[in-house]
Image (cartoon, rainbow, N blue to C red; front, side, top):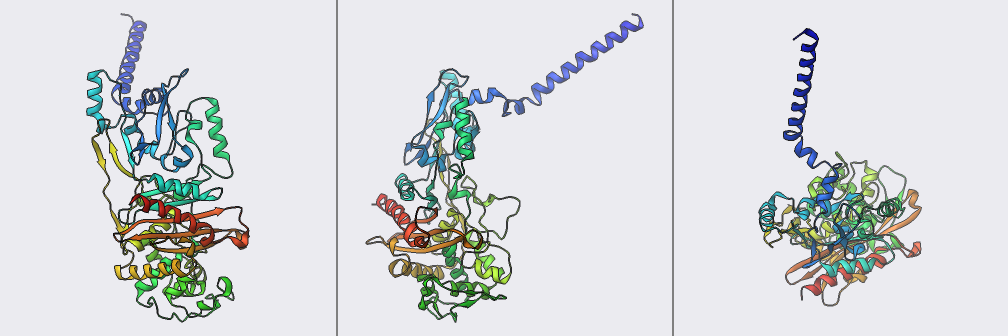
Length: 494
């Protein structure tokens, strides 16, 4: 063979070798990566080739699937009363993807999860189509509806949990959205999603988990807990609190709503009863920023945002936003002690505060998925309640219960009363905007108590409503909503 032909033969041999190497690389190294690549349309075709498993509430599916024509996708997701349940389910859209439970449990819902291998094998042998598993939630349908209906035309959120287990019973938002409206793959679905996503009222924001607000006077429960745990304060002893209170290192005085004379030198019980700013701002200052941070962290707050805005320790399994108690100077710490300054909390976080008090000081980790159930009804995974922390001793938690029950029985939270039921609560009206120029947020946190302990703790925040500014108050706007949620849970226990 002459030299030119030999070179051509070598070159062709190298090309064949390269082709073989590339082919084997694709088949044996990159195969799994390419198979699951989001840009691989075959992935979505397979995902929607059969009905998805369902998300279950109180034994009933709040999701479904329907046959579609004219696309590569055989089925698309449907939702029953989507606006009510979207804060729980999230969405599964052929056009824009998925989020929340729909995304987190996508392999299980489609049947591709390794834990469903046996079911897939049986289906393949018998010639049946692949089936997805079901995600069984902890939600209480009556409580969810009570929360959603209670919000009415108001913008806000409700979170309710079982203090004894941490099971989430309700997560409601207003405004909300229906995931069914963009579940398909058409351009109309994409446009509907974009319209919702661009809406200035943010109907797709999960306010119960992902929006933080100044907690206002509801945070005084945490400050009271810190005071009692320090041993420097007792429930019914005078607190040596002047009215008005000169903020530390400042020329500004802090007063109380309505200039209530009961706030001067009030005890912890009376200060919670009438929501005395002066008592708790001074208490926060006397305890100091470090002690306040430690107590807030025991309830689930963080000192500041570290490595992102979502809290990896509070997977529900949807991660909530981090609630923050600030590392700050003395004047700001005094204001943070009454739920203002840079103090920020989600509705879920404030429900956790009420739940810990109701559960004799023990804080359970919140969760919203009870079981994963295979198509053959075998339970593949069962969530076990988990203790998160013990923010306060049982003795001091019971003192806080006594104070919060006084708030509802004969204080600012009377509209949270339920006949024949012991209810503890705390109202809050949080300043909003620079120099308090915007309408304040109305808060109420509470729990209902039975002979077997407390089955429900609730946090409600009303972000905005058509109520006149001077009439906005936690006891007036938020407490009736919390009451209806507690009643719904209690009715289910009868």
